[in-house]
View 1: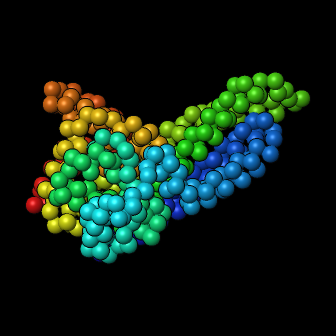
View 2 (view 1 turned 60 degrees about the vertical axis):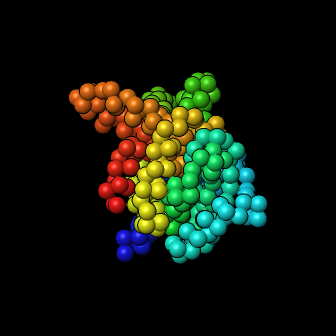
View 3 (view 1 turned 135 degrees about the vertical axis):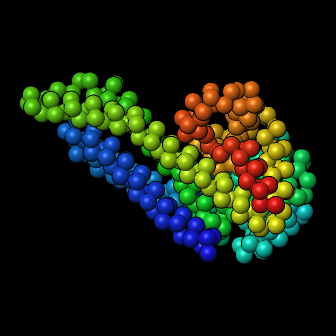
Length: 316
């Protein structure tokens, strides 16, 4: 029952997420339209946000795959991998997703797609070469759990929506500093109101991407714990995924195809700051870790690897 509740929750969160981003974008447009006494700015922001939300919903997975430089796998040329994923999909009651590969020796993987019928699982060539079968099954089951829980729709939409909000905020900031200096008002009251709205707009433009990014990271961290548990239940062998996460944590090579917009999609932080954090934690005192951990954790794309491994092994 928990899984079905999670699917329903993620569908609701998807609608709320799109609505929240639309409100932020429209609010930005409204404030700047008031500051410059130009209703056209608001209309443009509304049209832009609606069109971009539709594009992100239907094309977000294609955009993500292009950003990641992933290439499709021919099932005939890699029958072992295809059969592994297909068997897990059948066990989970899911359609077999398409499989893509990123040619990179770093160890990582992710899933994308707005629903199970459109799902894609992406592996790096490094993870396929260095994982044994049980570990690879654990990774694949983790990603299939994201698909079955509709995490992929939620997380992939975040990639595009955070990007557009950041771009729009940056545009308004640049316009404020470089494009609006010559504007004059014939009415002192209107001029004061415009100045106030300008300050509000600048603050909003600065804070909106930060708030959006924090929402993105918080969603991602929570999804990873659930996908770990669901994946372990799917394979009935939690040690496979735990061992895979240990190998990934020991790998210090960053994934070249990853960027800040897509980092939260991967099974582990593709920049490997989590691995560095694990090493730092071993040498720090508990007091110093406690002082910074609360705030440092806000900006992590994933929960701590050691905590994920601990939870998995407690399931055994």
